[in-house]
Image 1 (cartoon, helix red, strand yellow):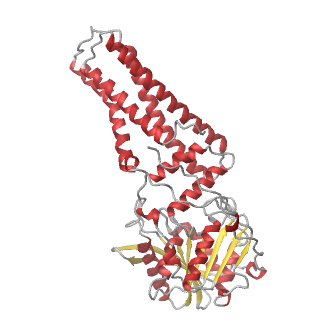
Image 2: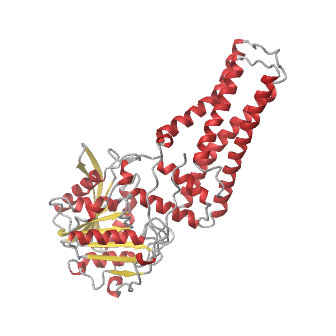
Image 3: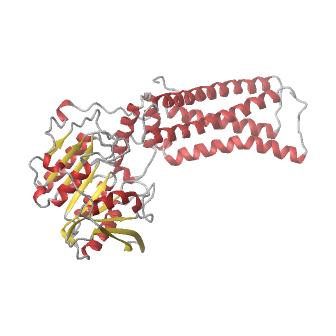
Length: 474
């Protein structure tokens, strides 16, 4: 009844990017960002009858200037996320626009990339109304999830998009990107294989349609010049396959105006260990944009530091019907109800002042009741431990330094609790059966308590078995 194991194969040796040249010195020329700027805050109406808060920063010097619109990555974001970068680029001679990400039509379960692309096009049209903006050099900057959005916008009819900057672009489906990133981060954390099985089986239960989004058609429609930037210290992107898929799309579009650069030591956000930006990032960005249209055809298409991808980006096997999100939620809810039923039944009996048949087997019930209480605490502890462990992994995906002892300790706690729950179920059933054989006649509320706790624990045992908590691989 278990799903197929998620075991991505190593990337074949013939599918590497091979040695690439160093980045041209001309792209790394120092950039001065000291120009005085103006700042304008406005509200831009978009589809769905809502408006998005927007901030435009522009050099005070006479234009027209190149312009850049920031399209955010995953999650709920605001324009403040890019204030530092947008202000620096404006002082360097670019008009920049940042805007709040929509919340209507975008949430954890449903993400319409086409709708987000339409928002970006509204921002393009907003900039085109300004006299200080060079319409031919008005482009979109997208990061991570935003790079699934910007190609859709660029491919729209009369989009007005003059160029694209793609930062940390996956160029594979969201499911493959998340699964690859998960495996890479767990590898860096020295996490056991069982941790990967737990998380990937949980991912397989998620039925969000956007996770299967295919980026290839949109990539094949890009006609504008493209600057793609990747950081060599980014554990979230399958470098080789992302680059290969981008190249396939550009080839299908007949687009030879592309520049791909791998920046030494940069992470997913183009920073060094979450701190300052990588030294090559901002100079490369500004020099390329200001140099358009000349820089659209670089002397070398792909350059920079070496990028290594260990394994292929593969899909997580979809969970069978009995392990999907709705069934899992129902199972856990039923288990909670079962655990709660025991103390509620006892409380009702005490409030009514009825003790029932306590004379028959009066000495049998107290030890069984203690067992049931311990079982309920163990089951609740296991659920909370799993939730805390997943939260821990999310936090350590950002800062992995010295995290592996906590990961191993957390996994040990979960495995011990799962084994303890199994032992408690077996011994409790044995105690109940022995009591019944000796003539014990439980009352109605005692039957409720026994059925609720034993049944709830049985459900959790099945779920724990499915998610690999009893598998032999550590």
